[in-house]
Image 1: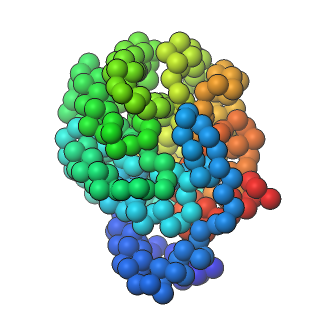
Image 2 (image 1 turned 90 degrees about the vertical axis):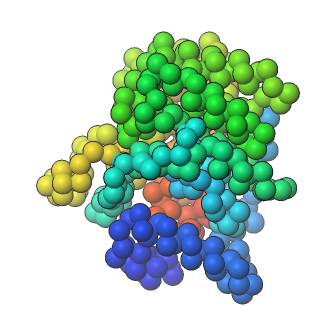
Length: 343
């Protein structure tokens, strides 16, 4: 109630990127005061655990934070107090990069949606590694979402992904390979059958050579054709990949309530939130039918309520992740989802 009727209207007066930065800083400061910290923990942490054991990892509960929310791991210690079972940090690239010019993050309030063209803005993989080396005995599962630098040609992309994996291998619990963002030029071409097989095979060979191999998942786009989904499923099964994350943001602008001229003025970018709910669920259902029960599926995209999360799990997801729902529904969404899927 506090978020919906007071905090959200205030934050929505600011640009989306400024609001996100301010909200996280205030959240971090608030946790430094014992009374506020106690209120946050009592309001947002749920006593409903619903643990899951998947990929050799013990997830305290099946609700995770999607990549993009805390790219550089600045707030992972604070975010644990919102009740998540796991956090996915990144996307990080080998070298720091600015990302695309601002403004690059936009709200479509009528659609409860977000358009972003951030462009993998991050401080680089080494900076994230240094933060995670100080995490100590952290109670949640942490995933590392890895990508390539914008100026790395696609034919050399495998080197970027491998470098990121090597740097983070000792400090994360699983990896997500991100080739599905629409905001890095030509990145989605890497989802084609041959480049995808080459990159994943290289990463798997390195991973399997380490003392403690980590689960590897592939994040896929919602805009893939049925034929492309079949190709991906074939490669996942052939290589023995641990799982997939479905889905990233969409380039579609179909059936939006927001005025067409407003949407056009925003320009390119990936769309997330309510317009993605049905398509993400559909992709999860298709991939579950193609992959069988042995491959983990994390469902993400348009999970704006507890009911959305429950339907995503019913469609075949083992775990769910949220991002846009946090912006529109507030931090109580994690607790709402846990109540829905357990009760």
